[in-house]
Image (cartoon, rainbow, N blue to C red; front, side):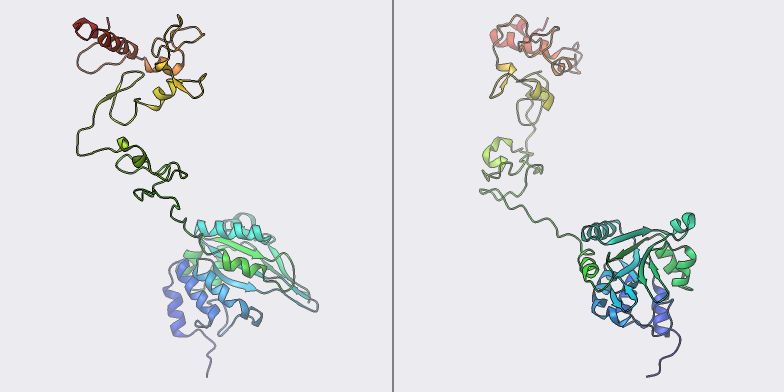
Length: 355
């Protein structure tokens, strides 16, 4: 077969149509596998070194996963020449960068991260010496500037535009000589983490799969107690909201404010304000006796401090508010007192007045 000293027309067309880092990764993977015969900056029919034959599948997979690797070498020891396994490439996806860096750090690989601005401001840097001996050293991991990128993809402005904003990543084995550490890490890192499995505990009665923070549209919060194995609606059907009916107006057990959800309190603040810290198990202050001469104006809980309220929450909850129907603003405590008088004298029309 006659091998021409220049890039074939079909390969040139494929490189010219590459617009993204993904496109370049697909073509570079094909080069590692042998179906594309030349990288744009290499001489015709330039092939990977024979020492990389066992690793071309890993390199092709990494390229297709988003880690564009045009340069790599295997570790070896050949008389005076010492070489460590290393790869140098480009990544634009933040999640893949995190996976590569995390995996490399856990494996103990050497890492260098650059971008083209590092070259513009600080020069190429020192990089990592990956080959020594025989009078010449090879360095991976030096920052590449725009001129370097244009030399790697000559007459391919779309390719340069796709690679320039990417992060330049170099990974190298910490030891010289043959090693599979880099290749094992590179084989595992580009794969995203497996998705979280479905909840193992579902409601043993209705099959509900919501857990803890998930809330169904009917008001059920799912399986809160996995030991019990039943969802909130199966434990207490009253939590289910019937959206076909008008919501029932309820009155807060502490401040008397109207609300429309399940429970006895209009808000978590009122619920917390009505707990007695001294009792175990907790008892709501609104259920305690009111024999103490120094009691909260709102919830009537006994307290030893000064002022009219046992807590700041009770003071805030007793802020005057209006029902919007022309009535003067009422404090929650005044509403509660009127409610109690009405309960004591249901036939007295003046019992509902707070004054």
